[in-house]
Length: 427
Ligand SMILES: [Zn+2]
Image (cartoon, rainbow, N blue to C red; front, side, top):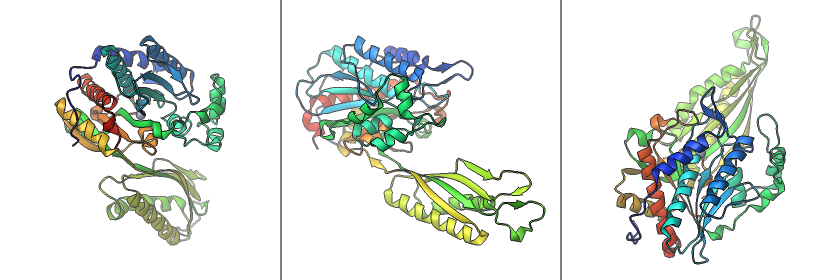
């Protein structure tokens, strides 16, 4: 734990009513009565309305509203020195039929922290900037805004990104009056990012089950996503003897069955693997399947473990294909490396959690976040608050207001500490 000065205005607290109002107002933008879900996918009219609402709130509070080339929305509370900035943020775009907290909570709490600090009239050493990143949830692949912010966005990616309906990202941006080329200008110099902090709902059951108020994230897990093909031979379901078949679906069944063994032998306690999608061809009840196209998503906090899982999966596919007379093909669609949170930032968070007498634990993030992108180039840390029943990406997503208050006060105290003591973030 770091020996930090805990005497800076310990009386500052967030206004929970104001947080509630903002969350409820934003929840109405893109809300669908029929299924009670929120539809604010990136660069839709609802998403743009959310961005405008946020800009307006930032303006109202005199926090220097701005929007960069990737349509990331910012608000700024200036510090007195030219030291590198402290960032706080998340995203306000949603998956289809979303709940009201994923992403939104982190942005609203960041806004609230800036409001409280501004009203307190403190002299901050460092500038604090609120940022709401575009397309975190993946209408066009995900992490678009934070990729642009960190310089990971390439012209190829920008020009080729499409949604499921084959709409190009560039067309979606043009339709909203945005110039897509400007997204490549959204990069900030990593040397000017002292810290990036993100508060997010856990989206898993751990904090809720352990009756804790907040989690301090140790690390964000790595993830590989594959698209696979098993190729056999389509044939007549009645006339082809069982021994003569090259049944691609049976190959997939064998592979799925191997997953628990592979995780036990090559994985760790946090390893996860999922086949979430499969398509059988020709897809007729009276045909032996000649082809299956399926997905594999696997995650682990260790790069070495991900590599060892990758090899074990390929080995199993090779053995199964040999046995069943199939061919296989693996295409790596996504490869996100695990990213550790900055130790000195975790220490500040933990010291603050103790000062506030919060019930907390250190934990892993199994989901990807904007923080993962920023964490590749600058010091990053995350706060989790409990998700009721572990529910997320659903209208049932919920966190108790008191836990939201606890997480928000932890963010407020941490931002204040980082912005007032420049040496704190220089490690
Ligand atoms: Zn999110």
